[in-house]
Length: 325
Image 1 (cartoon, rainbow, N blue to C red):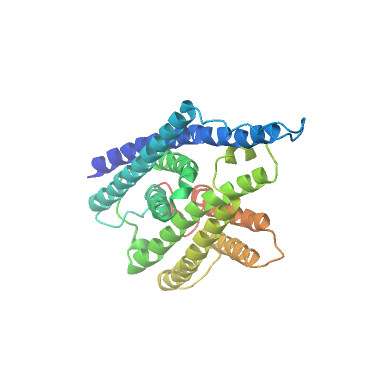
Image 2 (tube, one colour; image 1 turned 90 degrees about the vertical axis):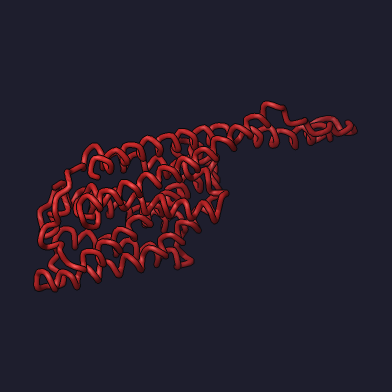
């Protein structure tokens, strides 16, 4: 079972990579028809005498070249392949987690490797739900699959550890309650960071910025929709994250005789909670610009990454069993 889980993770990474490449093809080809359509009104204005001599018969709209139609069809096919590959990768991802848990005879959340695999699965599963409800957001999948490839590959190549039994401190029903909720909230925050960054780039592009990285957002959905999705995901995840922190404090009281001790992981969890609360408060304040509030959401995700990677690798505390071994 352990070897099967490892192989399934490898296949999931390769499938995410196929999805990312397919999304990139759609991203590159998907604007061909738009470029032609934008040119036609300009030709009509010139024909009507705008900017030139009057009395000229308006020129009929230029027909869309067959190459543009072909590019549009190829882009659509690439997009459908990307979505199908993402769904297949998510199935492989889930199967890897299930087989890992069966091999370990426990929930697969006992170390950084397993935690990252679970968080990324929650993120991609939530993305498929969002995509099912709002297909127009499909081009955002390029950035989501890029994140999946990077994080899952990092887990497999850098964080991997063989299956070991849980340490005694984790043998509690609070392990399921606390870790399941923190994993779920982290996965939604992971997904929420993608439209947050997309909004910041697209908003800059709509304001006339054409330098890198704003130029990458040329074919993303509109800034307003991305910002609303960012808020919806964070508003959904934050109460779950709050419950997870409270559950962790209750578990700490039962296990260590105190609910809070400013352990490095506890401290960074509190920092993340404050930043995300600040984002939601700023988002609800009319005087705060949406891009300023969204930067808080991005900062919140960076604190989550610090809590996951930085604290586990560089600090020692009561949560050190969550590290690389």
